[in-house]
Length: 206
Image 1 (cartoon, rainbow, N blue to C red):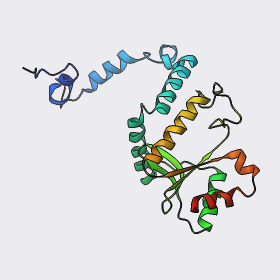
Image 2: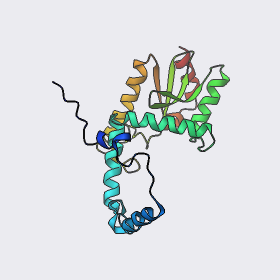
Image 3: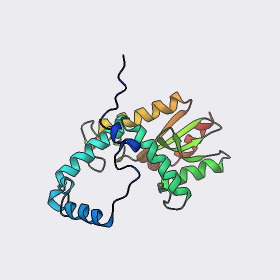
Image 4: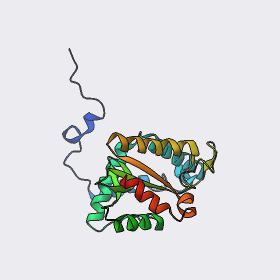
């Protein structure tokens, strides 16, 4: 027979918590405050150490890149959307090149949606009529394979190049699974080829 006994954590929730519905008096709040004074502060706080912060940051970035924290990314997305709606948070800025691309595509009569999302993943530009997604990749931020080795460490992201590539590949796969065609625009190629935008427009329309 399956046990109906609550786990230790569940026993402390809501009505199962002996303090449920009660409030601390001013006296007990003062006692709690006094007992916590100086604890978890300064050198007593593990996050005060730079090496520990770097380790935690690196581990979190890897988990985000692998998709393990997609559920958390979705929670953050919903919270950010709500905060943008009520004015507590401004929309994240986009690069000058992304704005140029969006303007050029719209000048061709294409409807373009910026910062498009599929689940918890965000994409730069999406053309709904063509089911096309355009990703603008900065050579450094995305570690252009023509310029960086797979074991290169991107210090800004605290990730190896091959980890960044894996994340980008996962995004591309997710978009393709949702029925979109993905076109990647590399920063260096965009700036070097003056006819790049016309070529991109042809690729989208065809």
